[in-house]
Length: 273
Image (cartoon, rainbow, N blue to C red):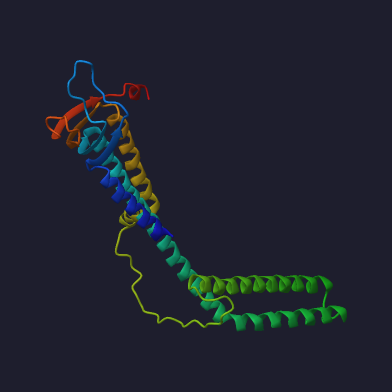
């Protein structure tokens, strides 16, 4: 799921970068009328039916600035998605490692726990028999039986926890429910337990690489760029355009021409907004 989210953020970044390009628009118009246009002093009248087409290239400087900031925000969103995926990968690795050793402990200790549970049950029966025959004081027998009950409860909780660990490991390994499998004991290697980094350097490295903190740092950058976007929206927009035109009106001196120009606009309400 996190991989798909990261891919989606990358596609959004590609779309945001396309918004920084100029706009290329092609249009075609067909028009007709039942009577000629013109005035009473005109000798020539435009055609009743005509066809017009143009291709225009326009570029708004303000829109380019806003699109550029949005593309930077989209790039930070990609980094946020990557950090979230890294967080999930780290968590899954830790879960698999923990579940493996718990499941392996369950595999090794299950028979021992069962024999220990049988011994506790046998000791409970012997204590009750001694108590009935009055061969032991009632207080000592009850105290001993209470300790045995506590041992049995701890054994049952431990067996339950260990059995759940194997189910959790099977789910993490995508093994079908109910399918039996055995775990191998990995080879143990003797490594030096001496830490090569100082405590201060370890804390610094942990804070620098922790996905949650890096996620917040990217979000802070996105928020700071949102402030820049708000300031850019206060500026007037300048639109540069050039177009190639054609008109089929037979009375025109030039039926095709190239036009260009610039247009400035400013929304004063953005100041209050």
